[in-house]
Length: 227
Image (cartoon, rainbow, N blue to C red; front, side):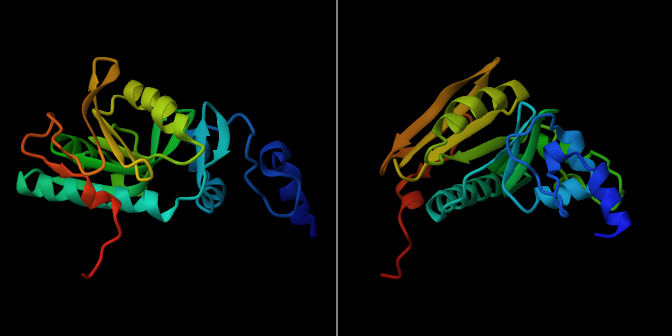
C-alpha cells in the first residue's frame, strides 16, 4: 500500500466502510441518510448492491426472483396501456429509488408517474443541469408504487412500507403476490391507506380510483405460451 493509499484508508470511517484496502458498505451500520448518496464513491458502492436505508440503518434487500419481477412488469404494462388509452401523460420504471424521508431511502419494485404528478416531476431542476428527475432518487411521491411481496420480507412490504408510503403521501400503493396470486390496490385516504380493490386467482378487478380500468389477474401469473 502506497502512502497515498494508506492516507485514504486512514481517513475512511472503518465502521461504515471497513478497514481494508477497498471500501465496502457495511450492512447494519447506523448513521446513513440520503445525503450520503451524493458522495460519488458511496453512490458507486451503493449501485453495486440492492440496498435500502431504513431509519438510518443500511440494509441489503433480498434478490429479485423472476416470478416477482414478472408480475410487476405485466402490471406496469397494463397501467401504461390504460393511461395511454385515457390520453394521460405517464411514465414508469422498475427498481426505483425513493427517498420517503432523509433517513429512509427505499427501492420500490415499480413506480408509475402520471398526469399532474408527471408535470411536477418534470418541473424539478438538478445539478448538473444536463440531468432530469429520472436520473435521480425520487423525492416527490409518484402516482402509484407497486411492490411484489418478497418471501421472508412480507412485513416490510405489507406493514413497514405501507406506513412509510402513506406518510410520504403516495396516492396509490399496490401490493402484488405472485406466489399467493393476489393483488391489493390501496388508496390513500387522509393519513392511511384503505382498500380500493382486491382480487385473487382469476379475478378481474376494477380499482375505483381509475375509471374503466380492468385488471385480469390471470394474465399476471402464468408463463406465456405459444400454444
